[in-house]
Length: 198
Ligand SMILES: *[C@@H]1O[C@H](CO)[C@@H](O)[C@H](O)[C@H]1NC(C)=O
Image 1 (cartoon, rainbow, N blue to C red):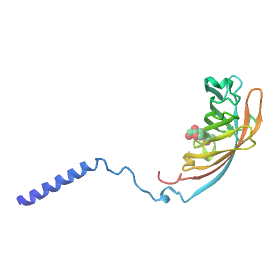
Image 2: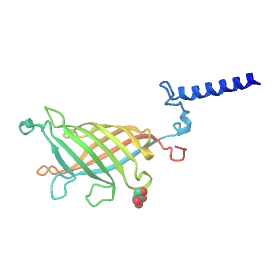
Image 3: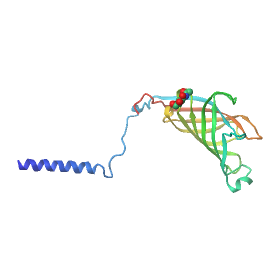
């Protein structure tokens, strides 16, 4: 009887030690999952066309200069200047077109030779099945070029696991103010897991 008692005590003790050891380094902080559990096999391809309104002029600009280098004022390509934007995205090129989202983020003049932007935007959608979902766009934008291609590096909501590319082309540019309306064509592969568990 005493032996059985001792054995049980030992068992309890080792169980206790085991659970303490479980919290030690080496405890597994990840798990492998089946790609089908997030519906990764059901990838979708969508083409989105929106018009971005980058408005620097007026009392309520959507793009504001937030910083620049001392040398920016003497740079022909504005090298060193940073602009933060909350630009409307509409379904047509006219300013009064239906707003479907915003492009929020930063672009900087990153080229010493020509006007070449480094762009870091989150496209935040506010309409339809993409309401509340975002796409992260980054890349190089040489504004003089007819078509500028940037990367879609990720997304959230309906656009989880997104990747793809964005092509921008100027629709209207006011050379005196810098205001621009830019057509964006996004080609995005993503995995709509809205009916999956997590
Ligand atoms: C988009 O989602 C927000 C937050 O859920 C909601 O308030 C708004 O009405 C939705 N807009 C449309 C057009 O569905």
